Image 1 (cartoon, helix red, strand yellow):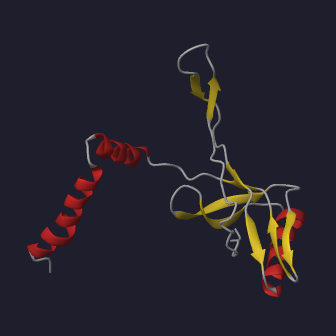
Image 2: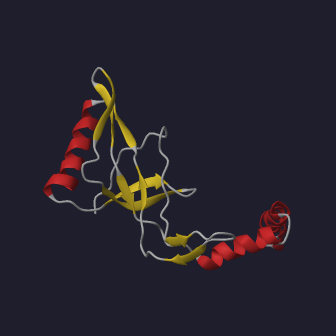
Image 3: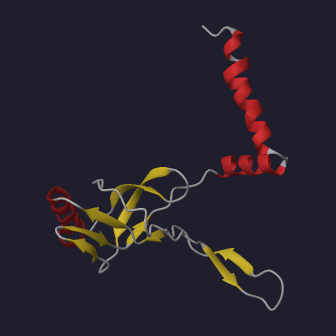
Length: 157
């Protein structure tokens, strides 16, 4: 699987996170909710700056390869939920548009579908539990002291 090498512009990069819930509003109180969808995708309309001839040539070759010749997913390092991660992505058909132009420099925007990373439910619950128990900052400071100060003094060789 190919990896897309250009970095997205931060301006306007606001992913719409996948939603697997089906919801029915009620006259009063909470809505009814249930998991309706499996493997729903995040979507975003990123832009990339093509500020030199090499980037322009690369972008058009990559775009043509993944939309016209052989439509298929590709990998791209993105920040969707917190930390940068490599995601499997797919261009949205008919979504390409040329953006601001300044001489030979211009940006392009396009729609993108992003396959979500599976979450670790046990790890998520442990984070929630730490916050439910009170001051998480205090607990993390104690852990940092344990790892960086107390354990190294135990004579690890």
